[in-house]
Image (cartoon, rainbow over all chains, first blue to last red; front, side, top):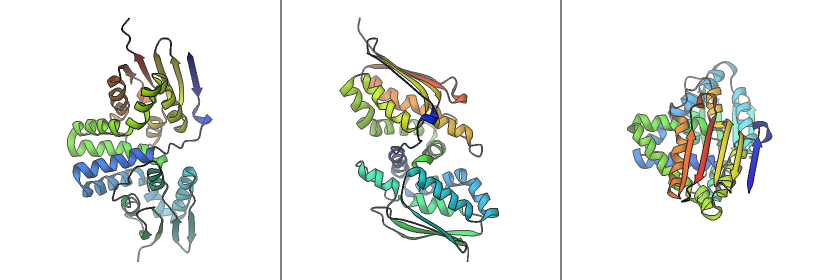
Length: 153
Length: 147
């Protein structure tokens, strides 16, 4: 039997949730080989590289650029979230984390320090800006959390 | 959070990080580990069950979800499977991100992951990575037949 498929990028939505599994495996590997400190080091490196433009934008445009960014990634993930920007404070609340939920659903154990994909990544993103990042509460099992970006005090 | 839509730059930085920590051998070691862990329950399982058609089933799902630009062909009579990647979504994304430098051997993770599984199962695996600077590549899998 002969089968042929041809697709253009525009034929599909970009959403390959299995990447949550590969990401978790990468983080677990770093922890196993080099320890938790190395995982944090890696996440700092990633955040400085990946979020560098957002860090610059925060210096000039404030938190509006982050509101847009978070709205966009949660829409792409098709994940319910509350994102409120009020009085120069951005609050993000979720009942579960899309990554943790997908890992659990597929029988994978999230890396122990999964929280660092939030805290380390976003604290690093705020480096050199007038803003700080605060994780108010985080439930390890589900990733339910409330996060805040606000002016440094 | 690192969204699954942000995985590619995170993966690329991960390879750089591993190389800085333990040299290229460490990157290869991670790819072998990922191949064993991640492809065991997906590609390997499908090929075990469906033969070379398992490749078609595996990549049909993955490449559609990754919104790739591709042509995929399965010729069961000849025992051949091929992907002509017209624009790889991963490498394409890295090339478009001007503020980040992709890991220099980023595309090599593909043959490293897939050949390990398929060659162990008795298939010949080849990848042409000569045009990855344009996010293009070609993957072929052939059944090794005795006649």
